[in-house]
Structure formats: structure tokens, C-alpha cells
Length: 387
Image 1 (spheres, rainbow, N blue to C red):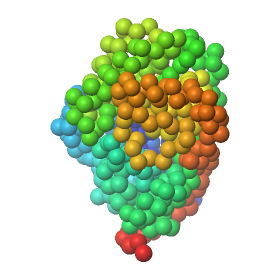
Image 2: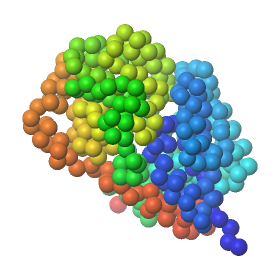
Image 3: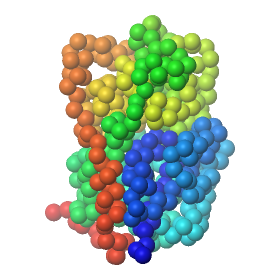
């Protein structure tokens, strides 16, 4: 009997799990593969909604690795990274995966990759080559690229950048954004079903707001920016705003505390720790725009012909479709962005938006590579100089 190839997928956040869902499902459904699902980070935190419970409805979780400390200061995050690396080393020694699959650029993923590299386990990285110049994630992402052995990127520009970092072109695959499979495969909620699921009726105008810390900024700047945005929201009429909480990066707790206070005082807002993938994507069908600094405004929203008002520098450097309006976190810029959003010219262009991140189908292609790639010698890498 041929031994199944063991594919270990690591997930540490709700957003990342949503992007990985269909790849995980493809791996789990393949008789030649054994899925090893490792859950960590925000998934295990009551403060961030204990989202591992949602994962358990979909798949068997093989390992839970708790790493989050009560502090989201630089010292607290650094300690969490150290704890994560120790725990991942022990986990890999226990489950002995053939390949570790990770996505993105979060600090717990850096620890998971570091432990896999030291354990001489091949690493497959999704979403490399991207730029987010307003966040420390940028440095983490490129570091993960250099530790990884297979690369699955979402645009040709990102493929070129991974190769520019010295990676072998025959190990870099551009299949588009894996998370877009959700748009085409999930049974999304009707407007009535969505309103029932959030126990709230939508208004004439509706926005979906997510704002994560810009981790290269100090905490006072983060506070100043989020308060400016919320003050602007207070000036809007006939408008409902669905707020979702920030992630566990440095400054996330400060943002969430401010959102808690704001939502209590403003009846036209509804705050959620996490909408989950189904409700979040369903919401994209019915809002006028995504506002904030989340990558979903650039990647998933265009699939629904939904605009994004991208605030600040967190996504600076990413490939952006025509549906994105960039602005700063001040009243004048936000006011101009809203006016542009509802302008006749922009609405006309919005209908013709083409998503640069693809149209789905990446998950099965990625799974096929993971299934069929020759593992012998995969951990040996050579720096390929650009010509």
C-alpha cells in the first residue's frame, strides 16, 4: 500500500483560513493525501471570537497551538513568536509532515516557517511577492519567501518579484488568488438571509469597515487615524456601517476598544468580532463599498464589482484594480472619496472592473502541485541571479 503524502496546513487567523478553505478541502478530499490541520493564533483566542470552532465544523483539527499572550505590544508579540517557534518544532516532530503549507505574512506564520526550515521540512508559501509598505508584514513576507521551497503567487507581477528574490522560476506558480474560489463555490446568502444572520436591516447606503493596525506606525498615530475615520462616519446620513474588529497585531486591542465605545453610541453601526467567511463575502454583495485597510477590498471585493475606499498605507504597493479609491485618514480625503464613489463616472467604471487576482480555480491547481511534486531534493535551494 502506497503511503499517503502528509500535507500540513497552518492557519492563524480568520481571514487567512477563508483564503485557504478550498485548498484545505481539495487536500482533504484527495485519497492520495493526508491533511494535517494545525490551528494557532487568533483562532484560539476568546477576544477574537474563538474561530477554531467554525473550523471544526469543516475539518478535523490535528493540533491546536496556543501562542497569544495578553499583550499586543512589541515585547508581547516577540514573546508570542518565540513561544510559537518552540510549539511548532514540537508539533512537526510529532506529526512528521511531508510538506508544510502556509499563507501570507503574519508573525505566527513566520515562526511556523522558521521551525519547519530548521526541521528540514519542505515549505509551500501562498501569497508571496506582494508589497504592503505600511506594515511590518512586508519584511516578514519576503523573509518567508527565502525560507520556502514552493511559491504560489496571485499575479504575474508578484511572480516576477519572488524570482527577483533569487527563487528558481520553475518553483514559482501563478495560479491567481486561492481565496477567490470562495466567490464561485460558496452558497452566498440572499439579502434577506444576510440581514437575518446579523439581526439588522441594511439602509439606503451601506459600508463594511475593517481597519487593522499599521504596524510601522506608533500607537498614537494609529489612535489618531481610527478616531478621524470614525468621526467622519458620524457625519454620514442614511448610512449603515458594519464594523469588524482588527487583528492581533500591535495596536489591535486599542482599535477594538475604540470600536467598542463607538458602536455603543451610534445606532447606525453594528460591530462584530468576526463575520466569518460566509457572512463577510455575502456582505460584499450588498454594501456600497469596503472602507478601511484590509486586503479583501483589493482582492475579493472586485469579484462582486464592489468598490473599496482604501485608507492609509497598509496596502501600499499591492496590485490594485480600478475599483479601489485611495485616501488618507482625514475628513477632507474621506469626503472626496465618498463623492467619487457615488459619481456617475466611477459607478460606470466599477461595472467593468477586472479583478487582477484572477477568477478562481487556484486551489485545485495548487493541490495538484503539492500532490505530484518530487520531494527528493526539494529542500535544497540555489540563489538564481537575475540577468
